Length: 428
Image (cartoon, rainbow, N blue to C red):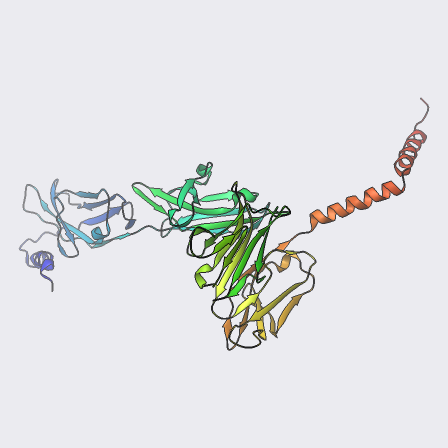
């Protein structure tokens, strides 16, 4: 038995062998606001002793079985609690102007932990213009008393800093909702949770919004989203005017926001960025950024040691064909006969390629492939782009052609309508 527990042990023995015949009251310890608190919170311990014959007590506090350094008051407050204050607390009392004593209370445990804010996205981080999205910020193990602020991450490399959103206050309750996303909502977000004297920042969470008709195309060679290690990868921003005013940027899985030319991971010539030898840390989202700061063509790139899935870089248009293949770099030829999965469910087994002849919105999701001996590929998100705008243009073209071929059609319809209206009239 540890020496620091002797005071409490002696007190218990004294209670058992005491010559007093009256029943001693048993105190009750309460902790407010809660038994589980976070570092920096204010916490109050209170010892209540109920005895009709005693009006005033001197209190003794114990922590983990030993005498505490608390004062002899009924309440003790930690103005800013730390992990060292965690433990099991109990108390007893001695009559201030008499000889009566109380029993020892039951121990009550105070747990102190470091708060952690977690930022998530619903329904997903890959969006098309007009889609709704909600950013959700939560503090582990706690749901009350927190106020949330919202930021975007700006600045390349290690010098990342946070910029408060102009409408941050509308997400103070923990949810920041965008009813109709546009290109300006593309970015990397972070939230801050505050309560009393405690403030904590969350993990970063990106949102990628794809436009219907971007002014620039990000051309990737080899043209797929997943790549082997130790291979050359080229990313080119191409517009109709062949402008060199585009920069390739990326946001890696490790949370780094980087320019192609600012660090040693790539080299940029004109609007083309080249990675000479890919490594897993090159995994992230890549895009084209104009000199004025607009961003377009966000593409997820995964560098993997092992099996990869060959899937299209950009969204597939409704009605087009979709072909998926599975590759492994350490065999010849590298194409595998594999099983293909969508959102974790098997959709086709033991084939060298999976073909979806007519793609629809229902085919959107996360795809992967798996071989029983060589392993499983990472998951790649495949989005499907609607063709509504093209359909509307086609309908308008047909109508305009019909009217041009039959110039009297509108006049005829108007005359028939007027004739029918006059026939329907009766003399007054």
